[in-house]
Length: 160
Length: 107
Image (tube, rainbow over all chains, first blue to last red; front, side, top):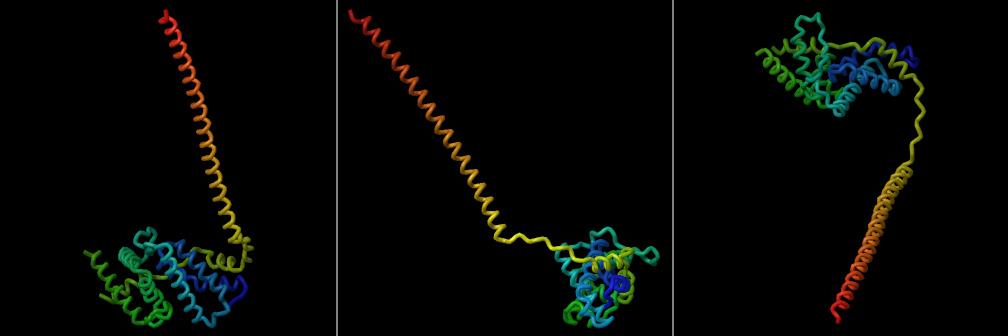
């Protein structure tokens, strides 16, 4: 772990997409996500001696970000369905569908939402998600199954 | 159907970048010396101050009520004195009338 400011800035630059991307998709608002990402990196700076490898760093960042998202949800009760600023890239083939899917993910409970984000944004296996969120693998699979069913129903509902 | 949904989710949940300069801001904040901690006021001082405030408020209310009671007593005394004076005056007038009438009736 780099000790100097420039080295730490470079490390933050390398990992910011992982942390901010996860927080932004879980919390919705840009400012909330950026504040949370800052908190995560400041916590990392305080605990930098505990990081053993690049893989451990990424696992640690995901775990702390997820925990802080759950805490933030408890404190503020974010309602993603009410959020106006949902990022959708104009170049995507079907921005409307992406928006609908994103809103449907935002209506999931926070733990289920994190499971879906870790699976489809970060490409983690259920075993890896279980380790990050400190929950049994069966619970992760159950969250995924129920969330996908719910998202499918939401999609069908919008198509009608 | 499921594959299509999963592909859609991968597209909808893509990673995003924070505002430009995020890494530099975070690194600067992490290396900033910690602000000196403000001295905490001991709990017993807070408790004593609260008790003193409550006592002062109770004393003020008690003094105000006592003052009002004293004012009411003074007003009652004045009213009784005035009534006594009026009754004495009326009694005097009535007696003098009675004496005059007696004198006129007596041959």
